[in-house]
Length: 247
Ligand code: BTN
Image (tube, rainbow, N blue to C red; front, side, top):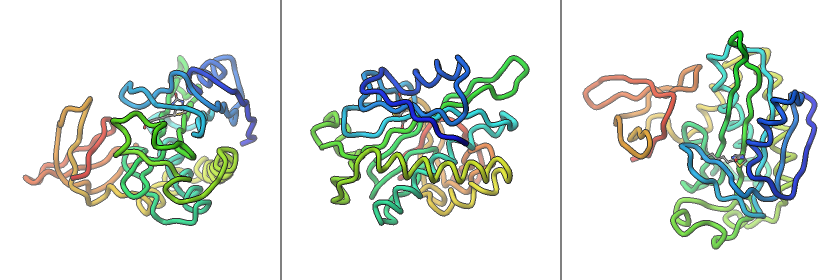
């Protein structure tokens, strides 16, 4: 994949810009980066706070795979970001929480939001994978309600990397994994995801829009990116949506 960077000072959301570029035919590998976002989008229709000091970018992909497996691109990005950050910051303390949050010592340092568009014949037209990394935000940059749950990499790990350093490392890691994945599929990602995650074997509450819909222990993740949760009564259910809180 040939990376083509499109850099902006300010955008409403890099995902929104990436979707409009993708609709206009932008090539796979186009990466939209903004120094800040005015209307950053999070999962579950939440707002994603995106002031200067964070890395906010979206990648346009056009993988020719069965759309059933499209969620794997998000897992793949989670693995790539986790490996890149672990290497750059020289720490093993960064873990993936299903579906695609990255936590540093239980505090969120990165979120990923993917958007998929199918063509009329049911093939993948494009996927936009948006990544937000709290590189150098100060505690006062986070809204008060997030200050306990979120962290900034440079502050927590006492480093001084720029957003460009972090972006370069992530894109290099992602590019290598993506190439391998196009050839070999899930076998490339799932073992890495399992190694880097902090979700398997945990007792969790599964939530949809803040409402608890199931509770149990996470026993597996499947090729569609869904987690399998076993309740105390032994009932197993898969979830490919929603979010979890680890008990
Ligand atoms: C989450 O809720 O955890 C996902 C957050 C994703 C945020 C990133 S920042 C870059 C890209 N543009 C957006 O508007 N959102 C994603």
